[in-house]
Length: 352
Image 1: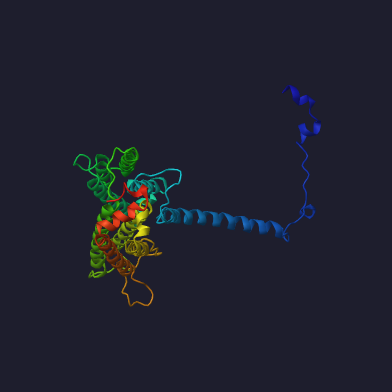
Image 2: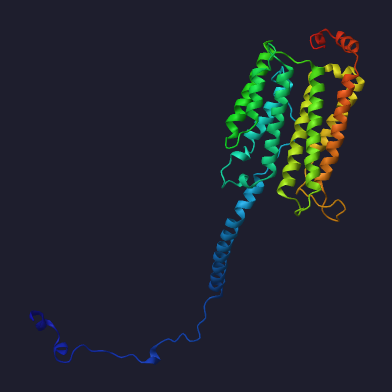
């Protein structure tokens, strides 16, 4: 080739010169050891990665149960009506506040999709359903005792119908419409366009209604307590019976307190006032029971209590106290009520 002439003669005759290096010129690493610091960080990194993987798996497994427990919130605190709004019908105000609590709090559990954590709950759906049913029965009672042209009040009747859930229907739109109907009734009452029920007659009718609730709940609780097969610590039906009774007890207590605040005549009637206080306290005991885990175990057990039996005891006391309240109102002579109302001209309209 043309460039061969430019190569050194040694390359053309003998090829490139290779110098061999002996092993005595090499540095051996037979006794070398890795740095302890690097070994520490290597072990730390591997363990961190392992813990991260294990934590991810455990977190994924426990996240759903934790979310289910966190979504279980039952608000059984007292209903305090805002002082900025004057309710012509305190009962309507209590019902609207109860509806708002459930919708704007944790939401309506029965409307959740099957994958939602609240769809796995038992106590909260039972509480919400019993609350809506109790408010519906009370609204129907109020509609009958506040007739317009001989017919039950239309807004209260609509509210009662909407509060009773229909299978397959979402409750949020129904409850929102029911709250609007109750608000219309209150607005009409403030303008004198609705019939205001007589307070004494309403309280007596409420007492009979609430006593009926306690009787029904006592029968349900007794059936669960005396069931042949008792699950540990409680079955699904046990929980439903307990929280259904608790919800109705809360509605009864709040409605009694609303009636007491709405009519100052009660303070001038010692017998009625004493019966009212006893009834509200009895319903409060049932409404404010807060077991961590509902138990329906034998009452003589060493560890687990029988919460259904405790609820039944409080309901029996509430029933007796509520019937005493109705009897105390029946025992009032008409002239006594009129004389109490005459002490304050502002009470003359409310007097029977």
